[in-house]
Amino acid sequence: GAVVSQHPSWVICKSGTSVKIECRSLDFQATTMFWYRQFPKQSLMLMATSNEGSKATYEQGVEKDKFLINHASLTLSTLTVTSAHPEDSSFYICSARDLALDSTDTQYFGPGTRLTVL
Amino acid sequence: GENVEQHPSTLSVQEGDSAVIKCTYSDSASNYFPWYKQELGKRPQLIIDIRSNVGEKKDQRIAVTLNKTAKHFSLHITETQPEDSAVYFCAASPWGDKIIFGKGTRLHILP
Image (cartoon, rainbow over all chains, first blue to last red; front, side, top):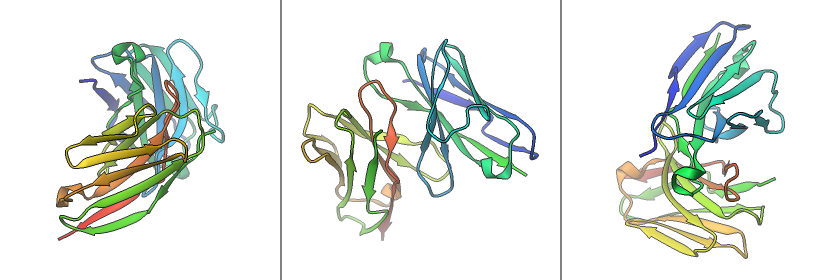
């Protein structure tokens, strides 16, 4: 089946530094990837949609200059949290979809990355 | 944009009884309705989904119903077991577009 991986699985960083999170589709080509953020005991909130080879579309209230998304290949999307602050501490989850794979709208989720900003 | 409401936020049922979680959505263009189960610290796991051309779908102990006119959809779990304890999310999406999640229901199965 379709497998999505994320790296790292957890990261701790100092306030003011930048952190990059990778999302990879391992056995399929992902034309579209999504990035979500989940705070403790809350739901998944969509941050942005990225399509390979074009700019990401950010949801209202998400700062595109703070959360940089690059979907440079059909198997890799990266999310960079710039100038991280403690309030950015969260569980970041990506998902991927390939409409060409099975002509459905199923999204395949990565295992998530736990970010802690000190 | 799409808005998904989910109730209840917490649900406790006796083992062996049924659990029902209800959701409503706002965007009539939505035609894909997945349900996810999430355990602590893990990724959401798709447990069942339904599309707008179907009113009901069942997979063993899990069933989902959809009322497009009322913009309601529900998850039914029968013969609940301890391993059903988790957080469940409903979601809605127009075909090929982003998925919007409900706020989640924490399901406790009581021994």
